[in-house]
Image 1 (spheres, rainbow, N blue to C red):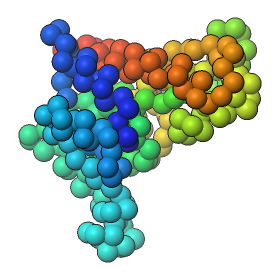
Image 2: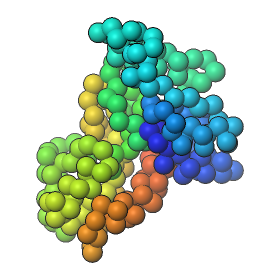
Image 3: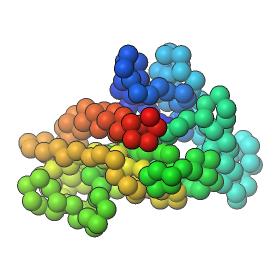
Amino acid sequence: MIGGGSKLSAILTSAKKRNSLFYINLVISHKSNSPGIKYANTNNIPAVYMNLVDFRNRYNKNKPDARKQYMKYLGWFISQKQYQPKLLVFAGWDLIMDKNFFNYFKCKIGNGYAAINLHPAILPKEKEGNNIKMPDGKLTPVIKGEQAEVLETVLLKKLSYFGPTVHFMVADKYDTGMIVEREFIKVGTAKTVEALRKKLMPVEDRVLINSINKVVTKYFL
């Protein structure tokens, strides 16, 4: 489950390895003209985009329950026999998913759903609260939102560390759930969002792949 698809290359590279523990059944984006969709198609992976606004305008004629129906249809589509993923991986997907979607993917792991999400900020482990202790002993607040917002906040608050988190997903909430893996990155001399992004991107790739392998090994092998 992607937005633009910047993480798809790393996931596919890992999936193609001879000893890989996982493979990709399907790629979905909610953004039209997603480069990730084109990349998946180039690599012979089934891939489609399903946009909420487009769904509302073309299929539900702006009915009040359009979002609910979108979630149901998307969950149903992904859960069909030819796909039936054991684990959903969200990377760059910025829609909040509700129970109408997740009801198709109930399980006894994580927070009750077979779905993990990559977030571009450090999220708290259980009982850590709203302030997370950094490697240097300082505390940092929980930062939610999309990547650009997160990195701008890191600079604004003059934080000494930042980094990505992969967590299990919770219905009707975002950036919340049991932590699978996270990694601290030292801000150092970085002064711009782009400088932080250059540090973040390769670490995101590593943490995401590690998390997929960790979940697959623990729950599906």
